Image (tube, rainbow, N blue to C red):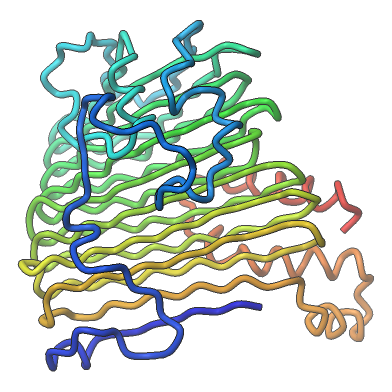
Length: 399
């Protein structure tokens, strides 16, 4: 088992620059503060796989999304089952609202931004509470087809809503997704990647929170050949609160990558990041990168991030890298943790010693591992679907 854990609070209030604890991972000064962004594809060099933000990604499996050799040959299909209070629009590239939540930070995101022809904008009106969760089901372009997309979810001041993005089907797809959360709004978002086995999906998700806004953002990754989701959270005013959760389960040959960045640039904001994943089968590979930047102006920041990985069979690999960069000593607290380990035989023995069969005991251990995240998923249908998917994965290896 490999573990890295760090907690910093009192030491930083006293002016220390390095986090207290042992085994912690920090990033070089200004590496995140100077993060490059652009709408221009050519502003980014074609990645070769050795760059820091691409070093874990199998470039050949991107099917040309990264080097411009994958022109759009198809389109996605979007089906909406939305609360009646929400409005859903199809808009052109010239809509002034697009891009308000963030700018692409890598070449694929820039390619997706320059390649889409129409975007979908979902709006929750001011001071409106949605009467039910809204589900947007996004079907891939089809086998051997390539598509680019853009979606924006807007919650105006003091609005409340639950939005589920459900990705299914086949094909190669790159997109930018924006969440613009207005002052005092409370929004829950669940992004499900339940693609067919052949699918490739690269998504950059931009989370922008206004004053006293609250956003719970959950990523669930189950299917696909290669899935890379990169959420970035930014705060525009005091009182913002973001909770970024994730659950993933990789089978043999699957590559699942989650890269998160939380940019604390204003004071009195809070962020919590918690991702858990399980792996099984030869060649299963998961990557989790968690970056938190607390800028000099972001006094009284309260942040913590963790990642846990459970390796169920030999031949699977999990990479986990938490990063924390702090430019002010006046914070409420900050910390990060990461752990990757194999199935706990002691837990299995404990359950078997109390008369529980091995197969049932193994399932109980895995369920317990994911429980911390599952109970925070506020949409019962999604939670039940995820639980069933985990059961099906365990059945596949006779767990």
